[in-house]
Length: 327
Ligand code: RI2
Image (cartoon, rainbow, N blue to C red; front, top):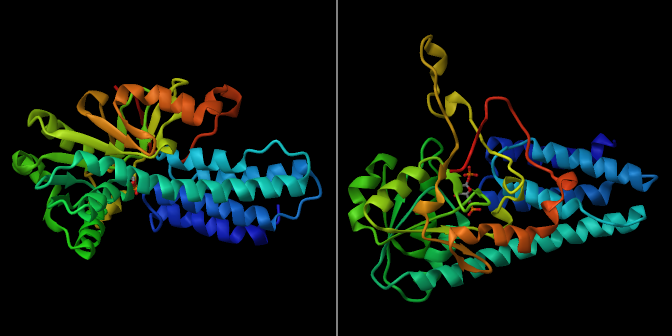
């Protein structure tokens, strides 16, 4: 393995782990771009050597964050090829990556166009964390001239809500920021909840930023519509094969920087939670607004070829993470 050319890729992996690069879509595009650039550098004498180098690079990226299936789906879509020469394999990986990046950016736009049709003039929308797919729907409604108000949560412990209010401010959209624990107290003012996704499972359940499930519960209680914005590469083929979704547990210092001063205190810092499909009204994808029950079909039709056990690739990392079954 020529470590020289691995430098930029390991740097991308470091940024994904540290969340300098974050957001399921941006993580997937960064991984695709770094695999492309690495493939252009590989100096292999045989196809086997090329495949082994690209597989090692893929494993480094897959070991960064365990939850967002966008990462493993992107890696799989980029490195797959049926070529018989090094140069043909290299061209294949490069064009797979370019196509993935282009399609994923177009998907965000399409989700905006489709999802904004479910927003009425005067609606108050609540959103959580910082999701490009969810913001695409809100921005499209605004561009369509609809008068909307947005309530954004802070999204502790990493404050992604501050990124969201910055973007809404730039678009000139009326916005309120709330602490995460204020959701239920404002839910009666909310017409629609719009959030992003890290994983959509085969049964239509959602894995997204910690706090999403509580928001869904409050929306369910208030009979407020709950919409998920998710590109089809965020659906998980592995969950059809019965695999559980790994919930990333991040370091305690994110919640309590001075944790080392405590002897009897342990911090729990799960980065994501699970929203049951029964709390989700619609999942807005680039191929349409679908009921959660249609997730299996999306996986079959849009990600189809992954059904074969032998081709299963999934994120892997860390022991602190826990797996959960998506009820
Ligand atoms: P987009 C983020 O995860 C949030 O959970 C967000 O809802 C999801 O990714 C999707 O984001 P993190 O990387 O792809 O902040 O829609 O942990 O931008």
